[in-house]
Length: 223
Ligand SMILES: C[S@@+](CC[C@H](N)C(=O)[O-])C[C@H]1O[C@@H](n2cnc3c(N)ncnc32)[C@H](O)[C@@H]1O
Image (cartoon, rainbow, N blue to C red; front, side, top):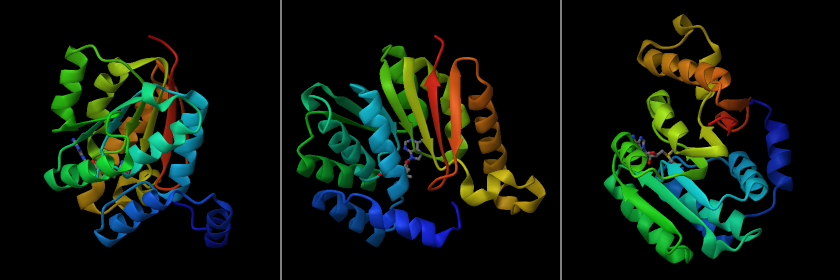
């Protein structure tokens, strides 16, 4: 998001290297134009997970499993990984298949439950089953975040963490709608509503960070 190249180069230089396997998935993503979390977001997620030590995680937007595996690797450094369960939702067939391969190779197959479907339906199903999560990572279609929010809040345990990625839309969100190209105005309006809602929701305490593509971290402070 920030256009401070020398700073981001420096921060990239001092950042700890990821495992070779994670680097390979990242290279595949780059080659095949799969959108995955940026390095600064990945390191934020690592620290957040290691602080929160969640055992039940929900990810909305698996893509090829990059962030899913990264979350497991982060947690393995601080908790008994056999106790961790990640449920991850993806609607795109090709992504689901590639994620399946990566997850199989990662060795975390027993801990990761992939659900192939549209999050709109899957979240409702999870609510019906009264599932509960300590940590929810929202990284799917930006225009749907607001629609997902009631279910996400229902599924999140009290004191649980909600992280959403891609919330600043390359800076669009701060611009007046008239300065945003017409084709991006609906998404612009929805993201503004989402950001307003999570910042003012009585169940949430939220901070918005201008890192990577923009991220929010919220804690569910009330049932
Ligand atoms: C930004 S990518 C996820 C990247 C992944 N979290 C990572 O960092 O490795 C977003 C993914 O969400 C999926 N997606 C978008 N809207 C969705 C929905 N309503 N239900 C399920 N998957 C969705 C897309 O197909 C895409 O693969």
